[in-house]
Length: 173
Image 1 (cartoon, helix red, strand yellow):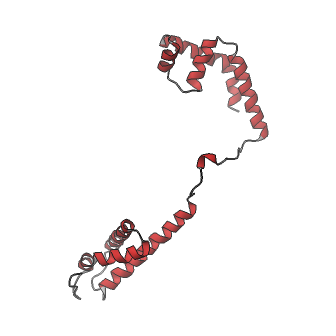
Image 2: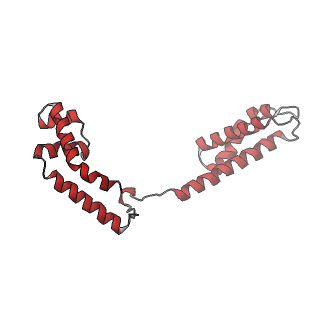
Image 3: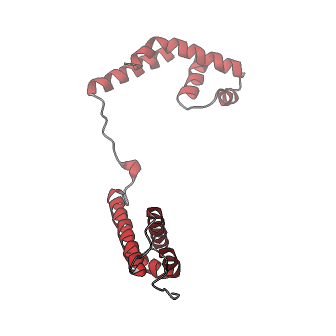
């Protein structure tokens, strides 16, 4: 730490004692990167306030400000950790279905009707439709998979869509 006089500005004291201030924050936070960030945020916050010169004990002022900022960081970290899920397989969590039993029954009946309708279209038309709507393949990928023209794939998808159009309004309810 270099020589700090009573005439030193807050900024000069900060620059001269930055290492000391980081050590204060590091003791509280136990994380060098976070400590450095807390010291920097302290400087920015005080610089924004445009403090009047003439702080009686600038080093004590900076030390208290850094300590407070580090404690704020620590509280924020603890609050965030309280909401984090550690060691839990998120994929295995079952989310309750908010739909009513009647709605579930209605949707399964509608899907059965659509499936029965798709049974009435030619198998290649059904396959193209399922690859497009269920598997999410592009029409070009379907054409390559089925070894047919892109226009034929488009036509098959349109035919299947037209066949189930009667039941589509049921899905909107």
